[in-house]
Structures are given as structure tokens and as C-alpha cells.
Length: 115
Length: 115
Image 1: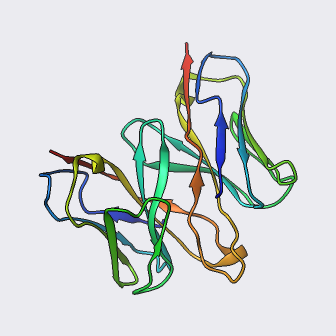
Image 2: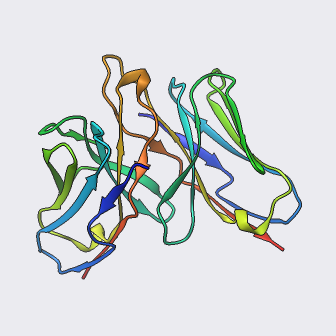
């Protein structure tokens, strides 16, 4: 059974600080996704990481993937209040023979950035 | 842009009712998914489908069924609603199979309350 563990699950930080959210998973996969969710809203895609060593950046967010360590990180640089949200990582297990198994999600990191 | 539309934003149903949650996507995606989201548990996969009339159980299929008669529409059915099925339900779609499958798009969600 695929397990996806995020930590921390809750993070309160001040504007201007840097921090990293970690996502560990338990099976071989080279496809990992990061999503953002605002209260009462659906999931917004942030990053799709498709290979070992992949690094993507958008604004103050940067995501990376190490498939050998089965670890992805979401790094926040110089946080601003608008980044307050819940962040989810999700793994797409590759099933031989094709088909889509659906994403397995971590429990989410509830991020609060205080002015 | 890919659109995944869920027919209801909020629903209130009585225990024992048969409930239909509808999802329609407009980008000819092969794969469609139903998740439920609960606080502290993240998103969990209920059922998915990778073709018309095909369905596969996810991690928590008990108490649910699905129907996919047309490629663009995927319905989640609660045969006899119970209070423990009160949750946010999210539909998603994606295209491709195996290593070419990437990029999931989520609907805006249906918040179901069973009383």
C-alpha cells in the first residue's frame, strides 16, 4: 500500500522567513504533484515533477524531487501572507501495463503566514 | 482550460436516501476519479474509471458505487446515505496512461451533509 507522509502538518511562520515542507512516499514513483487549497475551495495545481532531480520554481515556491530517497520538498522563500493555504503533495504510482491509478495524497500542511 | 464541473456545490440529504453526485469534464479525458476529503485525513480515492463503462475501486469504495455511461460524465452514487458519508467530494480527470499520464484537474467540490 502506497503511503505518502507530509511534515509538518501545521506550520505557523512570519512573513519574510524561509521554510520547507517535506513529502515522503513509500513506493517507486517518478511522478509527484503539489497542490494548493484555500479554505472552501478546490485544489489548484502548483507543480508537476516527472523525473528524478526535477526542480521547478514559481515565484516564492520551489519544488524538487529525489526519487531515490522517495522525497519531495516544497520550499518557501521570504514568505508572504498570500501564501497562507493548505499544501498537499500527491504521488502517482506507475502501474505496469498502463492505466491510471489515481493520486495518493498526503494529509496536507496547513500553512499560516503572519504579517 | 480543462474544466471539471460538479453539478452541486452544497447538498443536504437524509439518512437512507440514494444520492447522486455528478461530474462532467469537457476535455475528452479518458480517466476520471472521485475523492472524498475530510479534515485531518486528506483526500482519499473512492473510485476511478479509465474508460466508458469501466470502473475500479479506490481505497475506500465501501458504501459507494459509480457509473460512467459517457466519456465526459462520471457519477458517484451513495446507495443509502449515512451520516459518516458527510464530507467534501472532489471529482478529477486526467488524460494519458502509464508514463504519459500526468496533469490532474479537479472540480470545485460538492459539500455533502447527511442528516
